[in-house]
Length: 247
Image 1 (cartoon, one colour):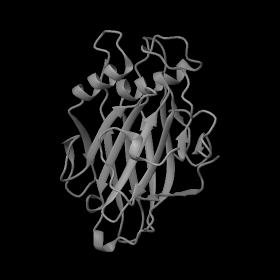
Image 2: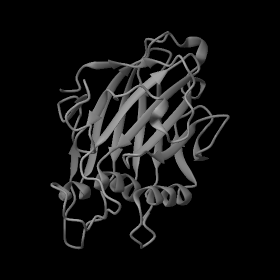
Image 3: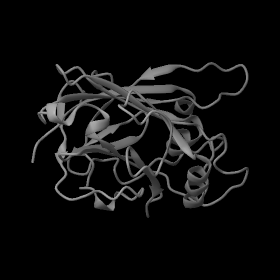
C-alpha cells in the first residue's frame, strides 16, 4: 500500500517501559518498509510521543548497526512547527571481529553506542545518552525471534509547547538508513523506498512477511544467503505521515 494516506497514532493508555523490549506494545505493528526491513508503530499520550521499530531480517538489522540510521520528525502545523532529528551512529563492527550469537551482537552494539545525536529539540540536543530520564529516552534490545528492537520516548515539550498541542497534529516521519561501505570500485545508490509513492505501507492481519525470514546465530555482510544483498550498500529513505490522537 502506498504511503500517501495518514496513519493514526495509537493512544497510549498504559506507560511504556523504554528497555528495548517490544512486549508491552500492541502487536502486530501496523507500519512497515520493505527496503529497509523496518516494521514500526507510534503512539502518544498527553506527555510523550512513543515509537518502536524492529527489523526481523538479519542482514538488514546488521545494516542498521553498521551503517547507522536516523529519524526525522516534522510538523508544519501553525504555531506547532518543529523539525527534529535523532541519529543513531554507525558501529563499524558490532561483531568485534568474531562470529557470535545475534543477541550478543546487539549487546556489543549497545555497549559501543554510548550516545546518539539529537538536533532540533527544545533542549535535548547534541550528543545525548540513551538512558535519559529527564528527556528523550531510548532502549535497544532484541527478542526471542532474534529481531533488533528500538524503543523511543520523546517528551512532547521537547517538540513544542504543550499548552498549544491539540492532539490532531500531523507529523511526518522521515526515516533514512545509511549505506554500508561497498568494496573498492563499486558504486552506492540512494533508494527512496517509500516517499508517499509505494514501497512501504501498512501491516494488517499479521502480514505475510511478519514471521521473520532467515534466522540464525551468525550473520555478516559477506553472507550470500540473502536474496538481495546488494540493498545493503544502498542508502534507503522513506516517509510516513502520522496524526496524533487524544484518548
